[in-house]
Length: 341
Image (tube, rainbow, N blue to C red):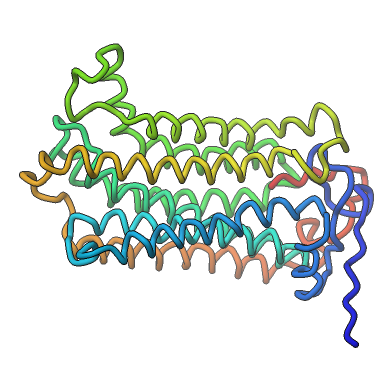
């Protein structure tokens, strides 16, 4: 009878460590099977894996349920929503895979997170499609920002992938700069994508429902709150920084970060659906900013560009000598072990 032995876990002094996480580390040279088995073992990555594996299937179910509706795919008005849902399914799946297989080797760890960052960048682009189609303020329609909103978001995705991948090369020598670059890489696309919502929020502040089609739904508010909480958790490493070792397995910031990100995407979907419904009669009289050809071209170029950026950083990583500190699987001499995800 075949018996599978769960992988041995390591302590903080045996591996590169996360700020405030003292135990539950997997061996940094695990096999692919060990990585998969570790998802059924309590490690400091287990909750990270499952908090994005399960939502992947939730968003895929939402995509299939909407796309399978009568006449849904045949109507161009719905296409931006479907474009948004594709990367909404991709980014939690890429994150789940990154957290599962990142302990195969130091190189594999970095490559896994390169792909994770690329998926997040495409998600930031995916958000721009429904916002341009359904959420633009009336005074912005057909203006220069509206016309270039999606192409600019595609360029932002290149910046996001490039900066976040580059930040991994700095995390040992300059951990503070690495964290700043990675935070900025994802904060900037979020701020850009949500410009229409911020403008509508300011326009309707204190006016309630008297501002007509510009009013934001409750789901928009929940989405923005979850996004801000997600950013705070990513940057602060709370609560584990206040009580190192107390939240190694359950409750550390990256797990809460995952949960808030998924909740934010859920509320974002509900907010987009609300805008689609409430503004449809008004938007029916307007020409779309980006037709089918423009949508397909933007997506193809964005995917290709992000993959090329990831390939360039991967090639640089593969050319690095094995003695490079970035590729060491054990603790650094001198005690400088500042690995930040």
